[in-house]
Length: 257
Image (cartoon, rainbow, N blue to C red; front, side, top):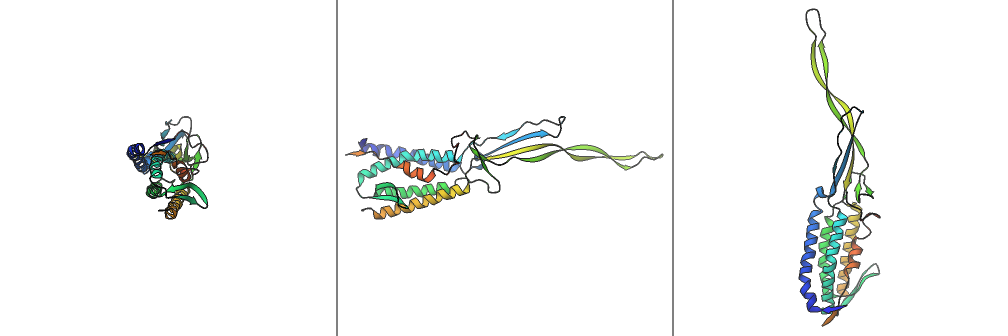
């Protein structure tokens, strides 16, 4: 499929604005821990006569993997329309290669320059992706699509009054008694914590790939020799390389907790 260069230039600016807006919005959202945090607390009394309390819960409102997905979608159009313009502007091209694998072949110099800046933005975005609290043990919840901790119990106590005799009664005096309050266990809270954050090892691995791709783009630019046009599709392989295979192995699209 072909298009005119003027048409590409006409739509490039609004697509760029939209992509940057999405990246900025998701970048700030993933730095708000309350949006990524969930909890479920259920209560059971010690005996059948004990006070019944309703469960308490907070849903995870934002998953980091969803933020990554939205950024990928927004950047795909932006990268592709810019690539189409640059392919038409120059014939100086080089392959982007990592460890002998060609990600994109015959890339023109202007897009290599553009991509270097974009990868810097992505590096900043990935650096701020929320990571799971290392003090907790986390497992993937297939049904909720978030990470969770094993359930743990905490006891609930209730102050119960009791008479404490200070002095026994005598023929001349009444007994001296005071009321004291004792903490008596009456039930147990069972708590499960939820999080939409990512394992630190996943974020670290993505950062490594961002840096590797930045280096590869620089090498390609140095290697390259410094109308109707074909539409170019390049964003898919690049963004897939950066972000795929770091979410949980299954159930990525499950509903958020």
